[in-house]
Image (cartoon, rainbow, N blue to C red; front, side, top):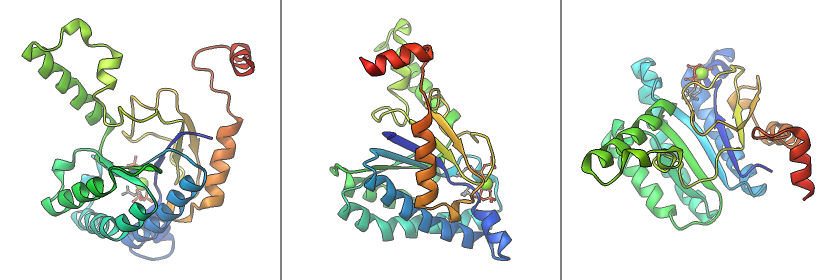
Length: 240
Ligand code: IPE
Ligand code: IPE
Ligand code: MG
């Protein structure tokens, strides 16, 4: 079982278009899928679920779609948070939150504060997130400390940079899932995906369900994660 699953929830727009509906109805249907997959993660005792909800490039979409996505985000947060809290889910939003309107920023802070002490599934929502942004803000934070004289340039290593990334205190993603048929990362977690197992499916996000999720978990269970070692070494490590 993976400890940390991260998902690019793609295909909402095409799902709606195939039904002759507006793209936003696909995003609405996608919220239902989020509910089901959060539940599936809790049932499988997965520790962390990270969902890509809005990329730093999604601002390029038509203003109307962006506006509707923001509205949906606000309503979903206010409607779901109590239930998530009751289910012991800890919520965290990662990304450049300062890009959102004040009302949404407040909902985000409230949701995080309410669920902070929960000990069940950690649900991370990546919103206005970009992998390059994440690495850049970490580098900027290191540069500040070096300039202030509190960090030696020689102390800037992988561990120091990693410690300033958005997900620094969580296990690295074990399994990455992208729905909707595209086989790319689209500026999602870049640093963190170094050794993550990748799983792509043509199923559109609103059609993704617990059975589809089980298929992804089954695929993950078949993989041999070698982290640079040989297959034989890994077998020996498992037996030891
Ligand atoms: C993913 O679905 C949701 C967001 C990016 C917010 P899309 O809206 O990208 O759906 P497609 O790829 O156009 O079908
Ligand atoms: C990635 O999907 C972002 C989210 C799911 C939030 P996109 O639909 O924006 O990705 P591209 O543009 O097809 O690469
Ligand atoms: Mg898409």
